[in-house]
Amino acid sequence: MDGIFECIVARKTPAYALPAKIGMSLFLTLTLFATLIINPIFFVLTIGFGVFMYFMIPRFNVEWEYTFLDGELRIDRIFSRSSRKRYLELLFDRVDAVAPVTSDDIARNLNNPGYTKVDCSSKSGDDSKVYGILYADEKARRVILFEPDEKMLKALRRYSPRKVTVAQ
Image 1 (tube, rainbow, N blue to C red):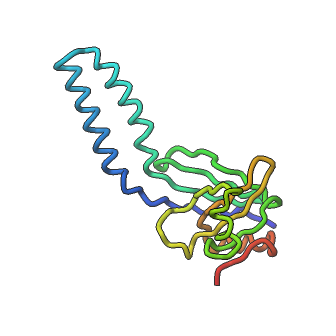
Image 2 (cartoon, one colour):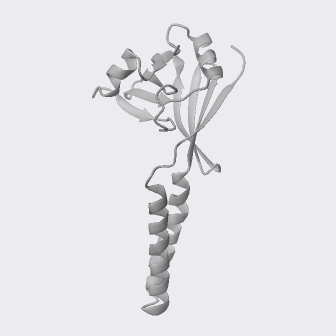
């Protein structure tokens, strides 16, 4: 099979993101005033919390990138459209099934304690676009939720027609 197939899905911003950002900003402002008014020792706390905010604020804006090439599905997590981290690498030979999350195979194993649930979807609430992958390797058995587009589903189905079930 020739070609590389990519799909990017933006995760829905969680409801707690805005209050968390506001709360962190207020706390940073209070520690800054405490440094100026009360005691300069609070400067260490202000710098520490500022560094913490620098690393935490981008974590609220997440995108998932799915890449399929030659029997390998890679899932990358992108923070604030700037920082990319490899999240999962799946060999398609170890995939048991790819099907809509509402199908019997996936729904049965979602709450199965023998499987670990890994959610790489947008969490938008629209289950018609979400697919599940039953994956087993030497470490663990997982149900991976993701939202591929039609092009990627066709590529997965072309690579392994018996393992991939496409929603009608």
